Image 1 (cartoon, one colour):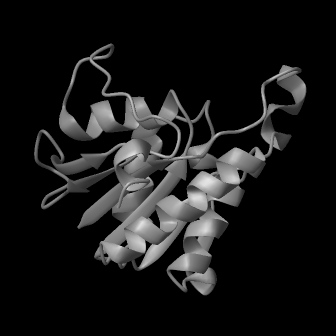
Image 2: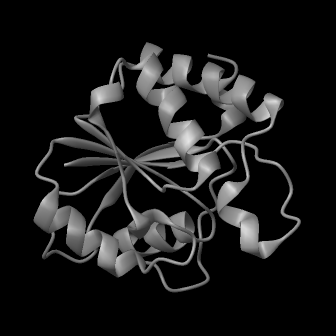
Length: 163
């Protein structure tokens, strides 16, 4: 299974923690995500499913990607990708509920970083940081193996904006 971890695009600043889930992408964030989605389309990214956090900025990011890849009918939402979610619970759900060859997960930092650590068998704090709009590709052959995945590639927004 190929799993792509995509961090949402540039969003408005956090003013009130109570409304964090409602923060949208900025106009720059939308523009960059449209270009990043085009670059991923050029790279022939063909996931079977896009799974996103329901938070507005992640939803907007996932929707831009789904539109570019012509996958609007293959976009689903889960609270397992919200910032406070447990990465291990998401990994268990992927194994049990998502029998696909290629899966895009759209989420937030630090959750995406913790998820990446879990997949790669890294210790807490050895985070590989994905910038906003960054994406990496993992290969998972066996969910019982340790580490669970190997990283095939990681692309920064800067690289994709030049494609």
